[in-house]
Length: 419
Image 1 (tube, helix red, strand yellow):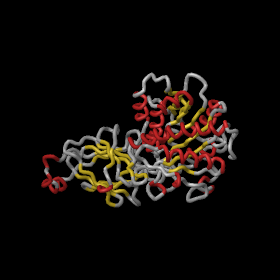
Image 2 (tube, helix red, strand yellow; image 1 turned 60 degrees about the vertical axis):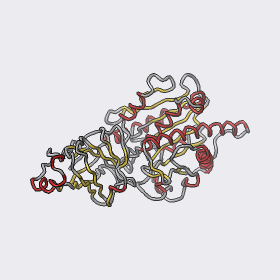
Image 3 (cartoon, helix red, strand yellow; image 1 turned 90 degrees about the horizontal axis):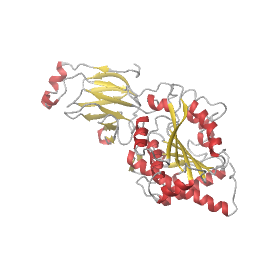
Image 4 (cartoon, helix red, strand yellow; image 1 turned 180 degrees about the vertical axis):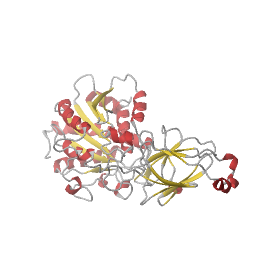
């Protein structure tokens, strides 16, 4: 059964109603329950519904192998206690599903206590309307629009079009900071090369918030830096609710070698060298890691193969560790060197990732990739707010790193490191 246009309506049997009478039939919905994913970011396949148990699975579409993103909404079940059971291995994260009762505007974690293996249970309030559930806290174009509406007519924040996708969607590019003249530095930030990695988007928003904030760091960044941010490199995948990771024939983050398949990657590769004018010093690609596991439960940088770039990553890591004030912990020792674990040539295959492309750009000193956990980082819970706070920490670390580069240049160490 395809997710596209999915709308399942199931009439409760008389026996099911009678069995639940002792739980307060007066508060239970008598309307047919509905489950669908026909909204931006939606993803689910429903196999069957047995009474109060829904059997479902995530839609992998053109994904090579298994991945874990899903997002759906339920209606018509007020007052009922429903169990949602996934087929196969569990795609439920460390803090259970994210839940929204306001149409996807805000989200909270249901908690691991509601999870039993590949299933979770939710008691719908007696007055429940539509309730949405998701593997993580989604971040769609509508969330970006809400952020931009909080900063109307800000001369230090502008939005333009990078390109249009294959399906005709606009891929936004955001410019922030020094926009009224030539900045001393330029910084490139990218996000959502893998459509499902939504928690990274909240961190990107936090960086932009700090750039336009009335803080000392914000003021310095607006005087010295122009940031170019692309919030949705896989815009079609984000809005369609795709996994994005391991997309066939290749995903967006393997599209930087030879002729790019995707309009956004092609447009970025054409734009950045012209835009940077040799002033690009730092590029950061934001991601989320695997569903669970020691490395995936830590905030970390993915080490580059080039020794000089790895040295700059280590320097940035020390700065971030020293200056962090937000709740998401970071330890530089958790960064993943090239050649360790999954960070090998084999993982990238014949493709080239954004970080490898960025390290070859003129003037670049730091090209890094940051993995932001979906749910738990160093024992702390990741939420929309804590991820935004991480973004503000990143903005402060970017400032400090650029200042250190200035000091290094004044000391005679000019030019790119060995890349």
